[in-house]
Length: 62
Image (cartoon, one colour):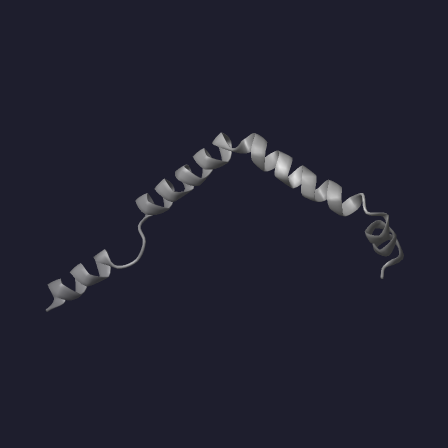
């Protein structure tokens, strides 16, 4: 009975290896698409902060 409980506890949850693999894949994808991601973020920031109405609202606090 105790062996079954220990076996169940050891097999449940996400292990360190799985987390490391997921992080490695995410970093790889980010490196592959780095230029596209940077361009996308810059375009969004530029479109938000080049709108004078939004900038004025941020400056005045409204």
